[in-house]
Amino acid sequence: MFGVYFGKYLQDVGVLTTEQYTDIIEQSRTARVKMGLLAVSEGFMTEAQADEVNQLQAMKDARFGDIAIDKGYLTEEQVVALLKKQGDSYLLFVQALVERNLLSLEEIQKYLNQYKKSERLTALEIDALKSSDIDKIIPVFIKDASVPPIVRDYIALMARNVVRFIDNKVRFEKIERINTYTTKYIASQCFTGDYELFIGICGQGNKIIGETYGKEEFAAIDEDCLDAVCEFINVSNGLFGSKLSQEDVKIDMLPPNMYVDDTTISTEGMMYMLPCFIKEQRADIVICMETKWNIN
Amino acid sequence: MANILIVDDSRTSRRILKGLLEGEGYTIVGEAVNGQEGYDKYVELKPDLVTMDITMPIMTGVESLKKIKAEFPEAKVIMVSAAGQQHNMLEAVQSGAAEFIAKPFDADEIKKVIKNVLEA
Image (cartoon, rainbow over all chains, first blue to last red; front, side, top):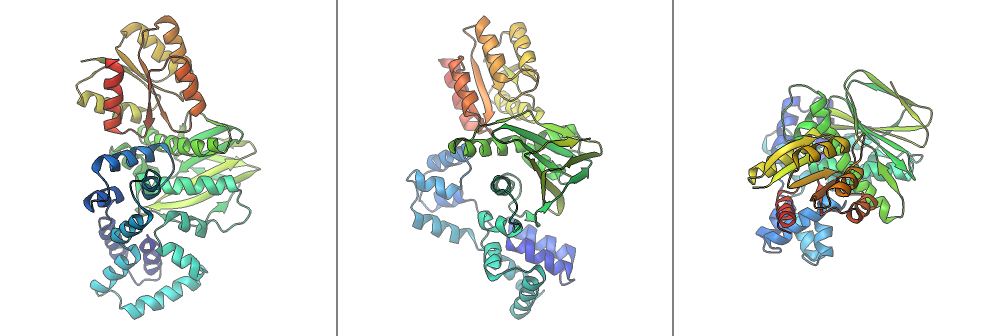
């Protein structure tokens, strides 16, 4: 996943063309094998066990490896070995740059240092981005200490679900606190109960999310497309609700809503926006909490 | 093969579920987009089985289930929902729901659950 961040930087500074960047990312998209498939082909699990773990993943927000360990199907050592076999995405990215004679290893190191400086990233944050572990990556984009834990937790879960259901090459940018947000396309759902939350996925990126989740092509972002995005939000919110209920927090999900005309969300309270780019189409995850929000 | 009524406010969910069930040879006799419409269509169509979403506008799936079971105790209703609806699920089971299917849909799980409920 580091390739999408560093690659975008290389594109922004003119080292890679948009076409070269897209091409390398698309190539790396197919280079990663799914954990379940790998575990079965390595003889660590039966196909039935892998199917069972996949089904359990639908019910709770946990990684394949963690569930398989809990069920006693895999050992921690086997999970580590499978992750290694899955392929180091950073090395795959470096390999692609070198093989295409776009950059030498020395030049890559030079630009990597420049990237660190320009984005003000620490060595630990660079390691997090290189790890392909979404749980380590997301905190890099939520540095603002004022972001409430519930928003952090929700963003982390939504990011995991974008990676799991939509695109494992998604690129995030820093979270922003905002008071108003205007866009043409919004798929949303509210929570009520111990927490009052508004969750929206906003903007042009709804098309690729709707098409990928709904497994259907849409000529434009219409109500059918946003309905598919609403289902994606609903499933993600269900996993979030399930996690909260284990902590004795009670919330109910309200029926999803969609907006296809120019719409403004505004609040005097807390509203956060996390930009995410799926195949370079921007979709903002917007969360309002605590105080009432207005949608016009 | 059995006749099935799908009740879900999401067009996407109805489309995916319909495709899966028709692929297994079942007949989808009707679709409804909220609990009230689900009840009305149950009365009209008397399907062998209903798949019922929980979170819907106008009337929730649990309310619709209660209404159907009060009048037709033999009705077979499978609740369909994203995770995180534990208290609603408990209420649904106490109100006579036959089974539960989690979203996102797993084709093998759906086939197994529906077959079991229809054979019970």
